[in-house]
Image 1: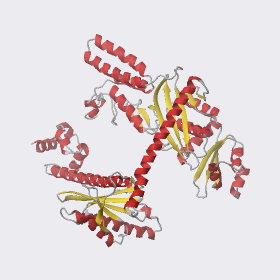
Image 2: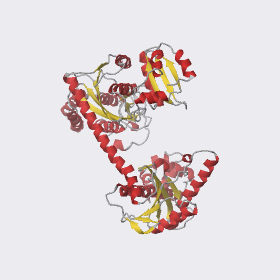
Image 3: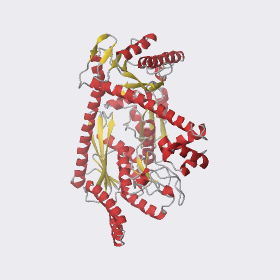
Image 4: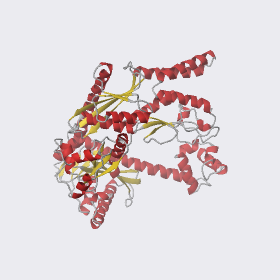
Length: 621
């Protein structure tokens, strides 16, 4: 390959030391990050070798410059490489979806009354973290289980011993929180529960179970039967969880098992988390664009990325295949854990069987993902191809906009515009309109106004962006659709088309869809169009129409409720704009204000007891 003068000079002066190298293209974008024991030897290889690997060859052909960062050790280079890949997400490194945002469980042990939370960031504090998990859903399910067994606080209040911080939330009333916000929960008793929560998250459920059984026995001996019944229910809940945790390892040590199933340009990673010989949970993730990447590279990359943000590292890690830098990674993880960590590639025996089980699960996860992807493709891109065919469109309708009107007997009329791109909702493109120029319930005139305002704004934005030499995509209305759908019949369709014709955009295909029979109306034919009942095209149009209807109704309902609430509060003596705003902020609805006590009303900013009494009298009489 041809090497420019800048690269030649840098190659001649590369140090024979460990570090990280950063490859960039002509635009200065980072396209690859790697580490090396010797920067001098490793980086020069890229510009000398004729690579058989297509991916590496493509990457090398795009290198316009490179930088490097020296480190003292190979372990430091490994950590820096992992962090830089997370930051820059280079095109030619293997990338994981949302790898910078792994969810963790945090128990805020540094607080007077610790809480349990989902978080995506580990901070240097006195709290305990568990994870990472590859699924936020798994975190929420775990937190829900813990809340049912242990009444731990989950709110964001600043809780202090012996001080009331407000009325308790719903969790207190359903028995899933002791309510430390009331200021009457003993700190020692609460912290004893937190120790059980931590042991539970560490996989030591049997130890927790043993203590709970002892507490239940003592409660029954002391004739505290209600307390014993509560403990019995907790014991049964934990026993039910333990039934799902299969004992699959006789070594009784903590292990993480990684297996990878690779097919075409994707790979599925399966992780088993084994604690004290029990499989307590498992995770799967899909890696994209793994063409020409070896199994060893995938596993090595994933292990580094996974543990770079992990809150817990087991004593033993089992891998399906050997990886580069195994010894360095062991040193890094050992230093991070504070005790010996071993990586093994078992060839026989129990550990090999565990890996084969993980591999079968990785294969199953991949096939499920593939089937879901095929179904999703049919629902989106397949539906767009069908629409092009059935509606005789000049091109596949990549961007579809749908309009709807909502009002109550002509009051608070609003319009909605929802956007689907490539068959999927693009919510950042949704727009809503208050009807300004139409009086009463006139859907025809309202839809004409909304469509007209949409394209009027779009044309003006395009002209402004063109003058500034900018792309159309930068505007809020400047991207025009390939297809317009009107939620309504022939009348609404004609009104919308007239507005489009007025602004010179009537070349964009437009159809109306009737709700009762899902028939399509066209401006180009007097006959209705009936799409096949089981076609992906019809199902897509139904989703778009229903989404426009939902978006319009939710906007209308919000305006109506806000208007009603304002009008009621405005009639109460002593309630001005400021107090009204604070009451709405504190309670949200008239019903909640009615249910609030005098003390709660008086404690709202700007309120006092005298005005609170007037509010109660007015709303409750």
